[in-house]
Length: 287
Image 1 (tube, one colour):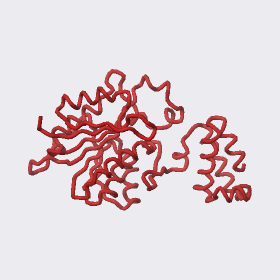
Image 2 (cartoon, helix red, strand yellow):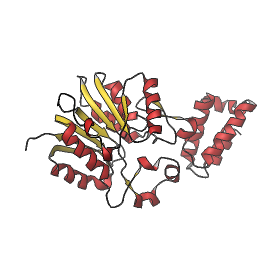
Image 3 (spheres, one colour):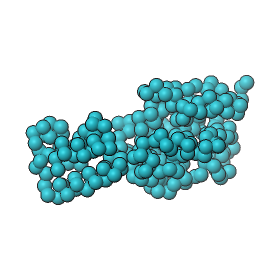
Image 4 (cartoon, rainbow, N blue to C red):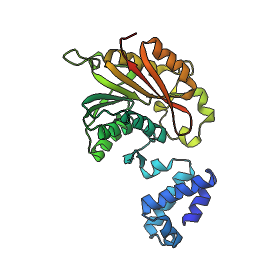
């Protein structure tokens, strides 16, 4: 199998552009062949072992498995993160959320909490970019936390990972021992896709990415946002911020909920695709 044969097979389930991009990524990352190498015909000169591996990769890709899972990693904010079936593949929209946070400044010491960390991409990025920040990251999945811990080691940053169910937060997590509020900033990309939206989703996402990190009940789409905002009322310092990645469908209900919970300066931001994808809100007692 060569490059042209691979992308033409992939074009059965992807657009031509996507198929070529996946094929290029496979050759570049797994076999260290650039596009120039392919033009020179080096894709036809793989060893027998490499050809066997390529056939195995092709079979997984043709079953719709995302190329990031097949290769075992994904790029995010200029870093490489290990990924597997236990964590969501980091996405450009989530990178924009991190960039929104870091663009506000904040190299002074601060305490941050990343809820639903998955691969650790948010917490690790913030720990690296806000170099004086003390970052804690929660996830309900022990398997996800194993991936996140390894990613933190690879990025050479310190993040305190904890297995916590945000829908059942243990009370000692609320406050510091001295009674002070715990965090300057809480960020989360929680599950926000309703079950009724499954029919419109790409099969490679639906069939391969962890449903635990994707879906919420149809009758309570703000389930996780409510729990996090309630926790933020108790754990955020005065003047602390909530940052969320959001489902654009529920932008207005989420704004209304946060306003009723006495959050202020609520702001929504569009992603690169023009969708309302991020929201932040200020914790303050001022009316």
